[in-house]
Image 1 (tube, rainbow, N blue to C red):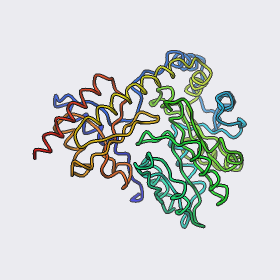
Image 2: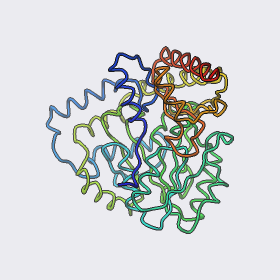
Image 3: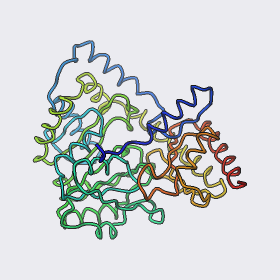
Image 4: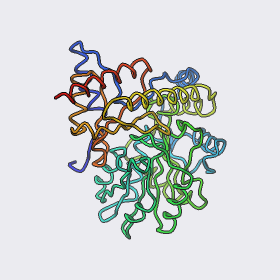
Length: 384
């Protein structure tokens, strides 16, 4: 159990909620979930499924109708061509990470993962007994993977490479040239890739680049995706993976041994999401794009703070090194004195020191209020 880490967003959320109970007003920019309601047609589909009795066990990999719907959806959106038999449904997207690493990695293996990055990547790799090897995402490179630096980290023991684009916590996105170079390396060194694309629909320029676009990569890539971010369905706990054929049975066995299956009625709602209207998704994406400009401009106006413009997702990774304080200290002061909940960059790995992550999944009004409070705090800290 000592090998397992945690996800700091939920810890900061708990602290913020405790302060709210004392009467404090807190602006929540810590938690990574859309501040939109699940579209009505999806909710209606779930209600109809319950009324029709879809409340029993279903096959471990998912109901056939949903697996077929996912394969069709991926084909329609130009992301990949696959068969329903390669799709596995899970309660949330995290199990796809967990099951993939458990199925592939053991003592002596190495897993390369992005740092800063989603904290579960390294945590699960270490839990499986593998060595977690961070690939630094540097601001000078737009917080994206440098293919040359990645190549220097690959050894004969490297079993799995984890990618995430658009990226949490940095809001960065891989370019076509980068995914091409990474894919060529994966093929040359015989690496399996776990491509976490849960934010794929929230790429602001409308172009999502993936290693799956490169010929030969589908045979060695696990696509990780879900409904939480795209359709504002975080509480529904719905995720899926698309696996090379040889991995489907082992992954399904892990599903059986852990959760049995994903709830039946929610899978029918998932079909409605994939096959229903797209206007609510586009409205959400456009809103996040507008907010990204507000928070980026606002952070860059704070003395001693700078931020790159995000390419997707709904996070800004602000550079606070000029403030001269550890990220955790600034995060604590921001919550306790300014009433703004954000996360220290170190919640996402050692290379996150000197940064704060702000989730702009909140109203523009609240974002502006948070920026004002942050600027006041920075001024107070600068004066000592």
